[in-house]
Length: 457
Image (cartoon, rainbow, N blue to C red):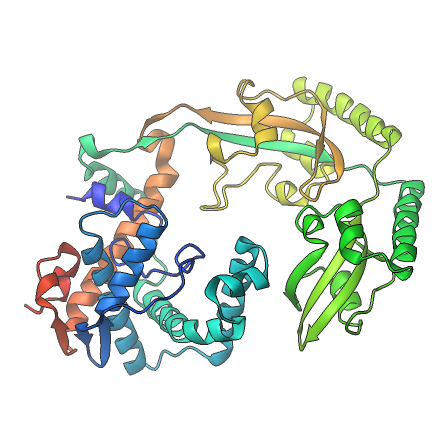
């Protein structure tokens, strides 16, 4: 019988209870400090150290997380699995390239920088430069990537049949079925009016005036704080931190990497509006830069015209003279939702069902009081990049909080059944593979539930 209590605690992982812990910002958020050490596990020529466990437990405590009684056991099992997969990957010549490691290090460092605010803040937090941080994390990242490749080989593409989903559901103790929160399927038809030439000229003129003040000696930071319309950088004096090629839109990137250190660009147009860019310093294919963004505004005439178009479309939708997905395809200018028939997508699983807490507050304001199959009145809104727009909200479906069941939650059950199948594949692989490897388990962990499959029979 499926141990659903344990299984659901790992439901987001590819392999429950054999999870390889890939670090996020919070996991790296505590400075590395020395701890007492000893070898507590050996697989082939790979070792697990007491410090590996202690450091992660310390980080969990520092984040204020509740630490389960079996946390050390769970972490030990995860690390033993990682070492087993790395040992086997080496035997199978499943390797990670230096480029893959460097790309992953860059991706994570950029993510951490975004989370903490700037490269300088990250370096200040750790009391060491980024290049030193990358060197410290290089070996753990290499291990994680190699283990991930081995895991992909073991698990492969896992599909489950409707019969397997049915058996999985029937194997869950009825008193262990989880409560599913309220969810909605919500869509939109959004029109962002074209900006008039007069509005574009006004934005350019504003930037020209800023450039004149900069040339007269006014600081770039002060002008960015006063006038830039980029919410992510304005309060930081326009500071974008360290950016790499491929991270910015093409027009911005092309202009940035033509600049010399300290130079300010001409006015650059991108999909977000008009910019002037200041190169702080170039570091190969990366650069530290600042910018000031002015976004041309849609005038009242343009917005009112768009509203009138949506008023007419709203009447047709309510009269069922045009289907929602057809209306989206013909009229909506919001590409992310347009590609999905107008529906908002749950980024964690690709489903159109969203927990109400995960729905954008402005969208939920309308959708919450709407009945299924109804359309909101056309109203003004802002696009993701802050531009003026108008839209209609559509509620396709609503579910109330309920106990997991096949009628309402087949997609969830299918996903969970697939994860269970992957877990079973991994467990079988572990049992087979440990027979071919030298394994030492520290006595303090031999009775751990998460380690029992590593004990040779």
